[in-house]
Amino acid sequence: MYRPSHFAEDRVEVVHELIRRYPLATIVTQRDGGLDADHVPVLIDAGDGEFGTLRGHVARANPLWRSFADGAQVLAIFQGGDHYVSPAWYPAKLEHGKVVPTWNYMIVHAHGPIVFRHEPEWLAAFVSRLTDTQESRRTEPWRVSDAPVEYIDAMLRAIVGFEIRLTSLTGKWKMSQNRSAPDRAGIVAGLAAELVRESDADSLAKEYR
Image (cartoon, rainbow, N blue to C red):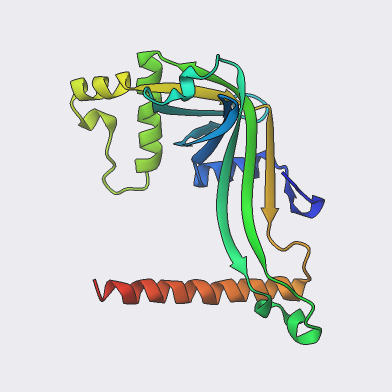
């Protein structure tokens, strides 16, 4: 990933927080002579290893777990918030006009060897933890134990778990750090106005449904 120094984000705790907020990983692998990508929600265990360990699961029908042996290197990509940045938001536009559009975003690349887990106890514990994490924001959270035991057992037999013990973690926060303070303030104001308009448009659209 191209990463100028002013966009680099290497603080592990900051990168982990993005993974927690945006846990849908794009897992890139080399299979059958080409690249493949799977999109999987994961959990980050910050205390397991120097850079943490990712845990998730895929359908047993997914060829991912059959394509290579434990220990194969994979890349997991996480993307945070992003938005188009208009040059009209820069005060510099009025000063000299030498401005162009850009796109701001937050991205994380996580590398490590993948190991697959088939143990029913591991799968049950992981699925419960993943569910509890996502349901924790709800007033009445759903729990795995709410479903019939035989149904959950059947569902667990249909999945394969995995762990990726991270060997590197690279963050890129492209947030116009290379612009002047007035231009950055202009971006903040422009984004705020844009998001208000988008929200108003959504509200208006609901009236016609």
